Length: 230
Image 1 (cartoon, rainbow, N blue to C red):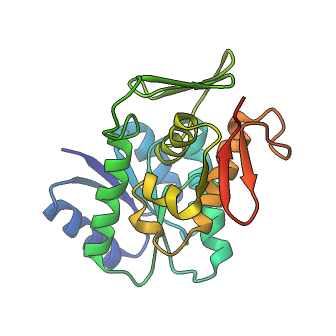
Image 2: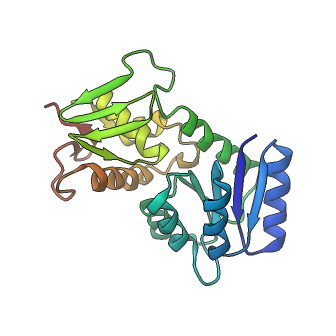
């Protein structure tokens, strides 16, 4: 049974989310503020976190940054903010997905399941081929879910890992944002291709010697991205 940590300060919403997730077969732990969320995440080590952005005190962005210092646990962010910039910031600090309030509890459960599937399939994703992918000096181990750049180990979130594996599997191929959405099974990101830009930015920050002048994940203006041929 997968454990979901729900971080939500509005009691009615927290209970509603808990009930739907439990009905879907998950074990649920609830936290009402940022401090208890960080403590619960460290103590219970959940399989996924559903995190409200608008928490009192230590908000969801701060909690995400704190969790990302030590963990790649998948995070689905809840936000009442309708501005695109707020959603992009959530992705850029490390969230895997987001749901905008008001939301359908059934949709949230579907998003949670989709992100967990993405986590489970962070490796080959059902595609036959080598267990270790290599391009330039980037190595992606599909079985151990590990990434190395030269001699340096790199920690990626499940979504970032799948995107990088997609690139490294076919260096030189130009992928549109729509194709990359399909590659990561992004039900949350249908019709929202700028989410890919946020994840690519995170990947570059982690693997590129100079993120502002990338040598691995290259932009193809007006089209999408490709991994360097050599």
